[in-house]
Image 1 (tube, rainbow, N blue to C red):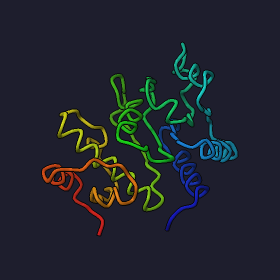
Image 2: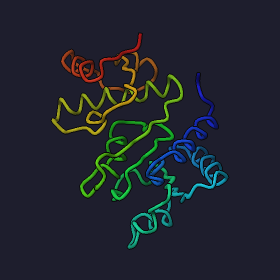
Image 3: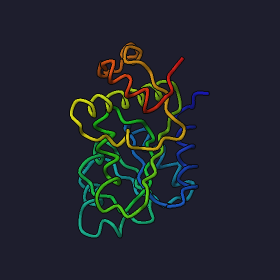
Length: 202
């Protein structure tokens, strides 16, 4: 069943409440989605800091003493403003309220915690996949990650991850017909993708 935006935000609140870490990052794309989540998290009594774009949030995350300010809190962050260039490896949980729009955004935003200096044994990242469009966006990221890996030999974090459940894989032409600008894979790259995930749409 497809979730409405409010149901998706509610599911994110549940994850935040149940997290063993009790702290982390929630990335969002759209300002309205971020604002809704802030309202729900505040009503739920969760320790949060809203980090939209702008100097105030940027300084909060990067200036001296950032770790002590951020620990024990959920940082509800604009992915366009804070998905790159922030050293937040003292946190180990991330939630994507909305799926990253492209593979590079996914690679960079995961790298806010999955980076040198991370002390946790593993970084836990939740994707709020609430409908078929979300599934296809995620499949497009994985499609493009295989392309980048095979053509540049650059490791891709979404391919290194252990997925539970495994994502649904769509063919490139299906993704492009849905309006996603996915890389056209060679037969070799398609086989690499199938071998890695072993699950496809019917």
